[in-house]
Image (cartoon, rainbow, N blue to C red; front, side, top):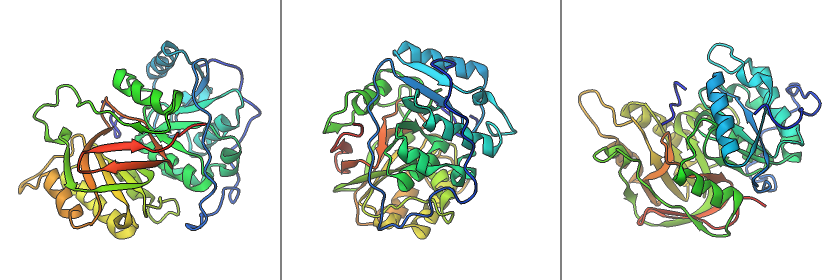
Length: 349
């Protein structure tokens, strides 16, 4: 399991040094009515070079070595800058350095895909330092989750590039995780129904149960990620557009009342109520209460049952070991009654 809170030098040299863009060089706040033309990145192939970055929290050398070894075991090359091991307090380097690392990885033509090694905290501090024009003109797979939620949604909103809520560099690529990643990124299908496998050793843990909050079916673009990150983006000009979308949400290690508070904020401050449907992942270690108690299941029902849209809980994504790869910006069909989610088109070209 990966913890949001506590959380290869390989192929070739990077292309010419690309500093974080000067103020004003990033694209302006997108007009909701003028979403950029959608861009599908090229599919992943064995032998490709995957760039490793740490745009949020820091990692140690062992974590980097393990990420490199895991990628190599699946037939990929790994590339990273020396800055991947930088540390500045609870960040993986100063803001300008982390932004520059991300920008440079998109500009590097020898890198085929970008994988964030871990989450942590720091993404929202550099969203306005990313060069969105550069990213749009150099599309490639960009993947991670947790704090990386901010990048995934901001990049899609500002550039049209489909991004991927999936494993981090430190995530274990077990058979379940790999199967989903392969079917989305390597051998994509025009229609792909996600599988399900309950986390081992969670029998009796209600946080891992699957249940329907509101029955029904919905279709729409996928968007979402970690709740606390999405809530922190509200009002900053980077919050996602949830209207008519299938919104997927997850959280870890927050007491139930805090999850409740963040979700209320999202419901009141965004157009989340206008979503086509809501897919909750596993809220690991969030069924935590002081007296008097209100369970996570009851809190979610109180907030979302009044919405006249399909909603269900317990899909295999979040801060757990068995996670699926979810493309942001791709059309999907959601059946809350049957707890199923299906992609309706390929996410890579």
